[in-house]
Amino acid sequence: MNEPAVRLEEQIINLFSNLETELYQGWVLKQTSCKTVVYPLYGTSRSKQDIIDRIKMCEEISHQKSLSCEFRIVEYTNYYLASLLEDNGYKRHCHIIAEQYVNEWFDTPGHYESKAGQKRKMVLNKMADTNIAEKVVTNNGSMIGIMRYELLYLLNGKLSCEVEIDDIFKFAAQNQVSRILVNIPDNEKLLASYRKSGFHKAYLYRYYQKENL
Image 1 (tube, one colour):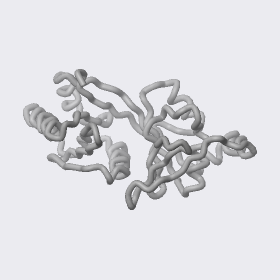
Image 2: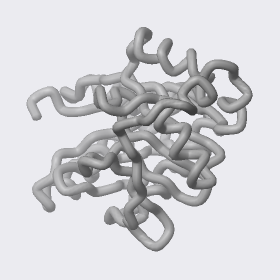
Image 3: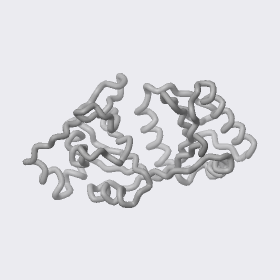
Image 4: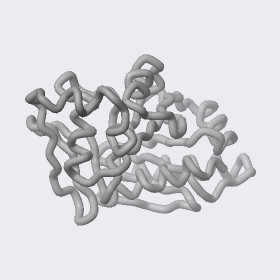
């Protein structure tokens, strides 16, 4: 098991405590308005038929609620499950979770200090989501992330043109955020831009979605 990555996945899952959650034989199912995301973090089986039955049950749970079913698998885990999903019509998409600590960013020359005298048009705000998590939104209402305690998770590394990485760190510093995680499509150019701000790859995960959906 890739334990460090699994621990981070647990933290990300816990950010979305407002979403309906089910547990099925060690797999965590999070349901949004349009899909069920399956996190097979625990309860791994070596039996092919058992894994196939679990896949079918997750699909059935999703179908009963008119939702699509997708699987999110951390690298170096669930090899057999990944193979079976591809054999059953699921398409693979790769993403990277990158990580950076806010205090390390302030120690990097040429970032916040170089922006200090500039007036930014974009302002990030927080909005209550649950009693333990808050949404991070732009001043035009677009949601870019979610935060809980000292952790900020950016939903998509492809930020809108109005938002810069420096804006994220400024918001983090103002709201006692100590660590930032960002979800980045497996794109070397995009990952390189985050590396310039001190982010490093924490782990890769693969997202499996039915090709015909």
